[in-house]
Length: 238
Image 1 (cartoon, one colour):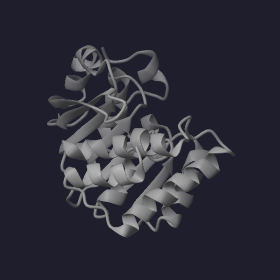
Image 2 (cartoon, rainbow, N blue to C red; image 1 turned 90 degrees about the vertical axis):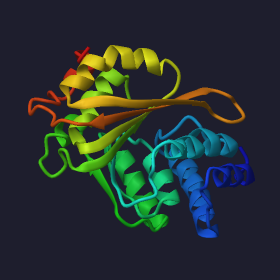
Image 3 (spheres, rainbow, N blue to C red; image 1 turned 45 degrees about the vertical axis):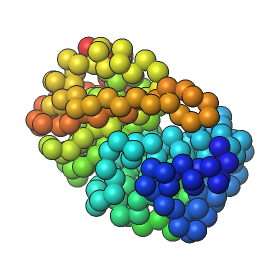
Image 4 (cartoon, rainbow, N blue to C red; image 1 turned 60 degrees about the horizontal axis):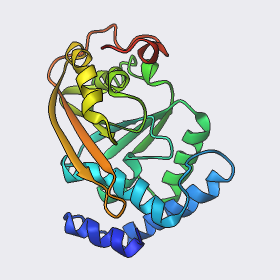
């Protein structure tokens, strides 16, 4: 995906990027490649691939969920900033908090936010399991996002405790999303969530399957969740 195609396809979705926003994406790409030489941020480094598989793919959540309002979003295991940083560039009004277990990635994200002059962007070096137990963050977010982090039965336990009642967990998945969701139904209910919608589409040009799963939070998550670090992954709520 060339930059011009990226801009045009977003415009067709009602997202008109300013010259400053286009420049922010350009700088994001440069820093991603530069830092990737020192640490493992992404296996995708070709410009057209980054714009399609990282930038456009991240923003695709907004084609189905309204980010064009004042929201506080938490991105769990964002890695190099996906999907929250591309969403923040497109929708500057949102407030983002990113939690990641690797300090090196947090250092990259802090540098990135400074370079891109992003305000209301906060970064936390922590495990999702302990972060969600913190009263300052538990059930405080309008939307919690996760992209390519773990299977749904694990993700729900890491993310739903952070969602406020009435908010939503938005999971971005590739293929097999429906099977994952089927296995995760029991856990979603236990954690206070309810499946609202599953949106499926294909990524342009390469035509690969993508799914946006929206889980509404309608009840408070029981205090014992998430369980201690590592447990959700070893013993998912299925």
